[in-house]
Image 1 (cartoon, helix red, strand yellow):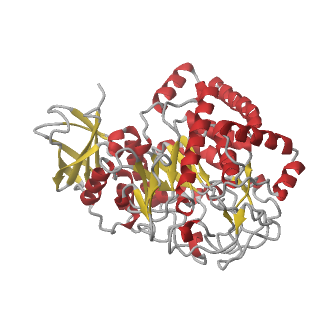
Image 2 (cartoon, rainbow, N blue to C red):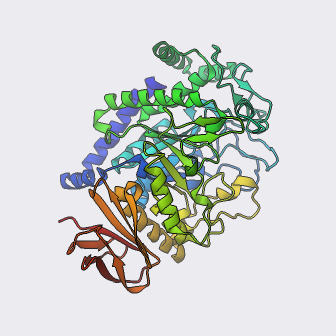
Length: 558
């Protein structure tokens, strides 16, 4: 795939030239200043979306490979694509939310047909049923669309994560043959009674498991060879594979082919990270090898594109180790062993703990616990916490009855945060007629949300909190200290006072007094980022009148 990168570089240069012509010099300088905010993955404000369900930017690609059979509810392609995401980036939707990273579900070419494995007929709209790692699925868009998306995001200071699947191929269908037996196993199904029965097995029936433990040289699947030849790119792909294996010295084993194909998206497009799927179902050393190749590819892209580099932030890898909790620290427990998936592999883990809080949240208990762990056991790493997701049937507030509490908990808990598409407008997670995960995956109804007053109020709440987090590293990685119990007030201080904020939750509406303690100096002028009111510190307090119960205090630059 890398030999095509010249085209994408030219495309990006053309896009950049058009953008520069459309802006005045002063506006450009302001934009550069705005997007050059300090960034740390440990404090990321990330937005996760299903590519097919977010926004349909190109209706001409809605049906491909004759995927027109009737499916179960929310189990077919619905039109979302890369162009739709780019539209929302350019409209400022993500910037208004304070989002500084976007993770989208896999966009590689999916199996062409569907299956019915007990949940109703289903196509690979979710992106986790790979047919060809080297090509994009036309339902999601083209390489040109991906290049434009990354360029648009980077111009707004937003980083892009793709989703890496190395554990399995797509299912076997009438149109999609099983891969050769030296590539995959089709049985047994995982029983989770040991490490081996979690790793050397298929996740579910008819989801062939890549033999990631193998170091045996294997030939490419004949079906893939035939596909590449029909598409006129067999020689190009083979030349790139030869160069990869010559450089690395790896055996031509299944996992290394896939690593090569996935890291091409880094060197060709400059993506900033990978969310890695089904980590615990693959040998731990696989992810150390993958991280090494990701880092190599990212450095190669930066050397080739010095004018496109956002900053010196390293490549990000966040692992989905199902059930991992921040309380587990560095180790993931199996029945018979423990594994350290952080070591030389992952920048962060997806944290399944936050979504388990009671509806009546004890904010201080959560915040102080996270602050303690993230500054001791996980001081060199990070977490990515969420409340709702695409495959977790037990999210926080599934009925959307405590949406404001959810926003406060998600965006003010120390560490990185993962907002799931639609959290910010209360998108329903209870869709009638669905089976399994489909109920979590309805499409964004942009017109309906725009006309829904409550959705707009919630969106505004998320925007204010999200921008506050994006503007202040202290929110995500500053040291936490409770200042008062009533109203609950705390400070976060980053880098010995380089950045400090004070937050009050559940404050009374109208007039209120907020304890400041030693967080800000006597006489300091502060701004409440929630009400946009200006206040002055007097006797370790500030007096404020607003209709909100949330106060977000920050220093005013003079």
